[in-house]
Length: 156
Image 1 (cartoon, rainbow, N blue to C red):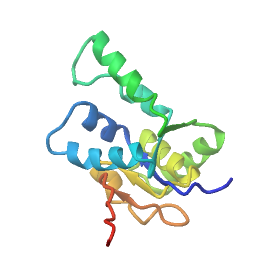
Image 2: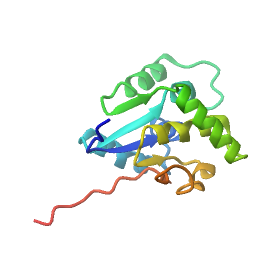
Image 3: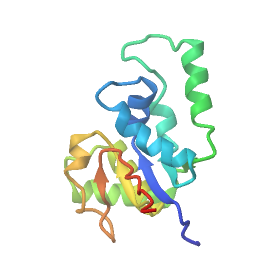
C-alpha cells in the first residue's frame, strides 16, 4: 500500500457527535481538522462501527428525527471520510488489545485496532480513557489526542 501524503486522522464516534451536535466546548477542535480535510490536507478515517454509534444527536431520543438522519448520512458521504471495515484482522487485534489492557471496552479496542491497521497518524478523541493510552499502543506507538490540526503559515 502506498502511503498517502495527506495526514490520516482516525475519528472516534464522540468526535463526530461533538461536531454534529455543535458542542460548544469541542466544536472548534473538530473544525480545525474538518477544514484541513476540506482543503485536501487530511483524510478522516473511522470504523464502520461508528455508523452504529452515531445514530442520535441527542441522548435519550426515542426516535431519530428524519432531519437528523439525513444530516448524519450526508456528513458521512464526504469524500474525505474513509470508512474502514471491521474484518477478521481488526477483530483479532482488538481481542489482543483487550487481553493486554483489561479495562479496555470492546468498542474502544475495535477503534484502536482499526486505527492501527489503517496506519493513521493520530487518533482523535475526547475519551479520557483512550487519551491515557497515547504512545502505549501500536508499532509505531499510536498518538491519541483531542482533535487538532496545526495550520502552517507561509513565511512570505
